Length: 424
Image 1: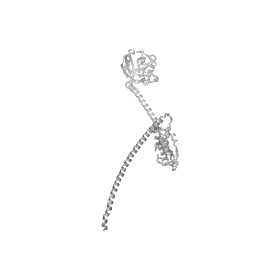
Image 2: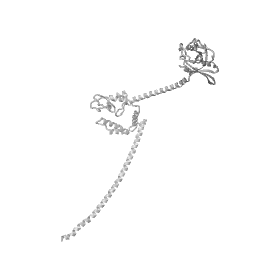
Image 3: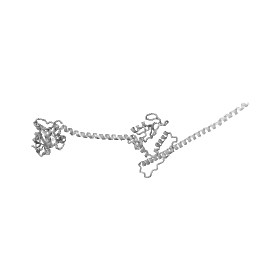
Image 4: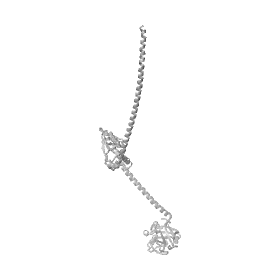
């Protein structure tokens, strides 16, 4: 440590604390920790001159000794003629029985500034803290008595004090933030890993998917992932959706990417190995509503799936889908007093659908009756027009028949008038 890292303040207490003098002090590279000492209650005490003044021998309290609770030993720097080490002076102050000094304050020669002290022999045995002040500060300390309300206080210089004052809370807050950030990252990492593990197919479920060897003439004959033709005897993975791939192509996709078919996006694996993310929710929600809907609403999807499978397999004797639809239309038998919510909702939806179907039938019947009545009216009007046309035609025919005899009579009479001439 360098000089002037600490301060010793001379204070007076008369109701209000008053600063009398402030002296700079230098520490030592051995002894107790002055920083922790300055933050404890031991940092307030009173100076006591010792005998001998240089503490090069056994020490006892000398002049200016008071009943101070925390006495500090004022020790003179050893003269150059018979010099003793700072560690020896500290040991003698520490081994004093009366009073028991809390620290040692060594003052320098007159006109010299305090310097940093270094220990030699017995340095490891020193437990009390040490400070060095100037000679002038020592004389100022000895002018006042503790009984008159004077005392001294050990402090760190403002630069170091402010640094530790704000640095320690900042380090604590920063460490807490870093720890919280690390915990958050760990939680997110494990959640993401767990989510990815649920999205992917486990090795145990992968072994449940059948593997068969390809034979010439089998269909399909091409892998949809690598677009290469299957070779006879090659191992192929047959997914539940009936799509076939190379094991070396589909296995990494299922175990490292997603457990769905690359072509139809159908989920592969057991329900226990289902996704916990958005995909599983999107897949489970339609199943939930399908359970609550009446059979008439479910028959289209289920029957279409069966028909698609039959068409894809090319079965020669397909099942009777009409009979299957009739079975689906049959109302299920529910036990009385059933408390299942899905069943109750299903019943409610069935009643609503029956009511809507009845209303649609009534509206269709009314529309049919109206259409029949309109057709009857139109038929009546057409018949009336037809009768009118017939009557008009009959009248025209009658008039034509009445005019026809007159013409014939005239034509008949003309030859009778010319007959005499011809006879002549």
